[in-house]
Amino acid sequence: MASTPLLSANTAASQNCQKASGSMENKATHSSFSIESILGLEQKDEGILAAKSQRPWIDTCNNLDGNPQLQLSAISCERPLLHANNYLMQEERVLKCEKYFSITEKVSYKRELSWYRGRRPRTAFTRSQIEVLESVFRVNSYPGIDVREELAHKLDLDEDRIQIWFQNRRAKLKRSHRESQFLMVKNTFTSNLLE
Amino acid sequence: MASTPLLSANTAASQNCQKASGSMENKATHSSFSIESILGLEQKDEGILAAKSQRPWIDTCNNLDGNPQLQLSAISCERPLLHANNYLMQEERVLKCEKYFSITEKVSYKRELSWYRGRRPRTAFTRSQIEVLESVFRVNSYPGIDVREELAHKLDLDEDRIQIWFQNRRAKLKRSHRESQFLMVKNTFTSNLLE
DNA sequence: TTTTAATGTAATGAA
DNA sequence: TTCATTACATTAAT
Image (cartoon, rainbow over all chains, first blue to last red; front, side):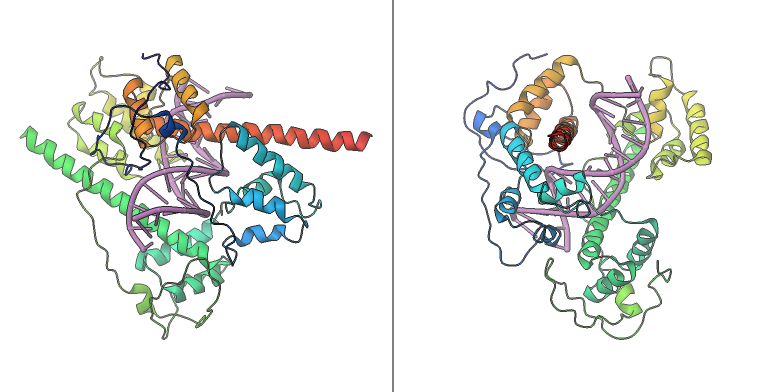
């Protein structure tokens, strides 16, 4: 086992490209990588000051405290900075903010945290909601805005949730198709070898 | 919950316009939609001939038996049927299948089970592998594809394992921070009560 | 029992 | 929109 902790690497190659998960081409530059590429590039820009809120679930914070500083600091970091220092600072800020919530407004500690992380709390669809969505998906995997609005109303969900659900569902279908295609090819290939 | 499956809708409005995600204007025509708009458009294309199997560890089954029936029944079910009946049937099939394995090929009954359950056998990282992973994690908890490939090569692991490990490691870090923060809140709260 | 590898999927951003 | 990747909840192996 190589005991070199991979931290002594160096030289060049500071690209941040992400490989397509599941593809096996491009072993290009399998040589070494720089410290900079590990600590990587934090070229995270801040597209702050957007006009309309892209994160409606954060707005609930507005009537809970009069300290915009807290929201900004919590929202501004797109990438949740999980490494040591920044991460802790982040958490502390969230904590301070939490003091401004009343008991009743405080849904749960975890939920607040994810809010201030700037990420929408994960929606848990009910079984019946899934059933309806699936039944619609079977006949139309590309519902227009009208269908989505109708679904949103009938299922008591945001239209955005519907849209995202169909996007993810299409991705899942595509994945499963890829999978079955692969198996077919593989089986054909191996059976050709055997006969 | 509305039990009407939304398939009985009707009349007009068959546009397929996509709303800008995140905007909340234009509630135009929030009325109903036609069957045609649901059934519509099935313009499914298939980007076929994609490369990699999503469950490569199942492929090893090929050289262990000449009974594709077993593989098919095992693979075809996405959710590995964890409830009573199906699960038991599954186990019996695995047992029968196992007769075809030679001693050397038979790793362990449990391992076979997890294969046929469609779940990857749990990877047991060595201590030295963990050490390297941890040392990299300390400086960068979001390694790019280049770093992951490098790690995979040096540690003799699949790149997928590296990726999953970092995902779980990030989740663990988050959890521990949550917990310590929670303790801090509780302590602050109680000490405020006491003074 | 606890820890953690593996899985499924909602959410996000880039192209 | 797709696509890759993330967070997060859950399952299950150790």
